[in-house]
Length: 415
Figure 1 (cartoon, rainbow, N blue to C red):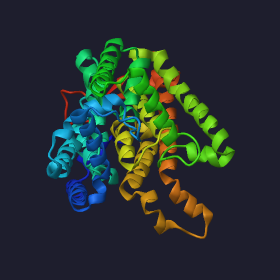
Figure 2 (tube, one colour):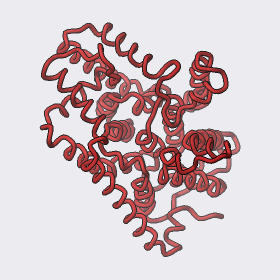
Figure 3 (cartoon, rainbow, N blue to C red):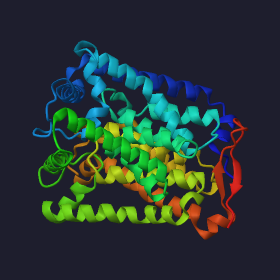
C-alpha cells in the first residue's frame, strides 16, 4: 500500500525540502511586492478600479456609459479603496494582499480536507506560495476567493454568516460564482438567500448614489460585458476554451458552440451533486467545488492570477486525499499543475517559439491543457469516489481533527 503524503513526509527527512520551498516562496512573494512598488504598469488595474469607486462614491457618477466591467455590487464592495490616499494606495493594497495570501491557502485547505495534519497544510500552502500568480498583489481576486471559501467553512455551522461572506465575494462573480453554484445545487437555501440579499443591497446602494434604475444599470453592464467578452476580436483569457471553438468553427458559430459546451460541461458535476446532495463525503463535496472552479476557468475570461486562486482547490484535493490506489496519478496531475503555475509557460511564450507548430501551439495553450487535464481527471476521480465499487471498498480520506500528525483515518462510505 502506498503511503499518504503525511506518511511520506515523516518517513523521509524532507526538512531541507520544506526549507528550500519556503525560501523560494518568500522570494516569490518578495518579488511580487517589489514589482508592485517599482513598476507603475502593474498598478494600472488597481488604480482604474479605485478611480471607478472614487467617481461613484464621491461624485455620484454613473459608470456604465464607459467600459466598466465590474458589477455594481462590486463597485460598492470595493468602494473603501477610494478612501485610501493616492500615494498610499499601491503599498497599502499590496501589503494587504500579501498578508491575505496564506489566509486564502488556509481557508481552501481547511474547507477541502477538515482536520488535515499540519505537515500537509504547510506543504500545500508553501507550494501554492511558489506559484507565479501569487506575485500579482495588486488585484481583488484573492480577497473574493478568501471570502468565498470562508463561506464554505461556515456553511454548516453559520449559514447566515456564510451567506454574507459569499455575497461580498460575488463582487467578482467569475471567482465566487463556482461556490454559489455549489451552494445552489446542494440546496443550501439560507446561504444562497443571504448572499442574494447582499448582492441586491449592493446594487440598490449603487443605484441610489448614482441616481439610476437597477434595470438600466444591469442592462448597460450586460452590454459592456458582451462588447468585451463575446464576439470576434474580444478578450479570450489564458484558460478559456473559446479560442479553440473559434479555430474549429469561426467566431460566430464558435461562440454558439462555446456557450453550448459550457452548459454541457456542467451536466455531470451538477447531476452528481444533486443526486447525492448533502450526503456527499467531504472529499466528494470538495472535488465538486474544485470542478466548478475549473469550469469557470474553461468558460470565462481569466488572467494568470485568477488561474492561481481557482486551481488551488483542485491542487489541494490531489495532494490531501488519502486514496492509495490513485496516489500515483493524483501526484502526477498535481506535479503538472505545480510546473504550470511556477513557470507560467504562456507568459514566456516567446522562449518557446519554434519552427515546429506543435511546440509553439503547446506553449501558447499550455494553461488550457492543464485545466482541461485536471478537470477530466477530477471528473473521473469524483465518479470513482461515488460509484458503487467505491462505496463498497474505497476508503474516503478524512483527517481526524484529534489526530493532527498521523495519516488520515480511512472512513468507508456505507453502501
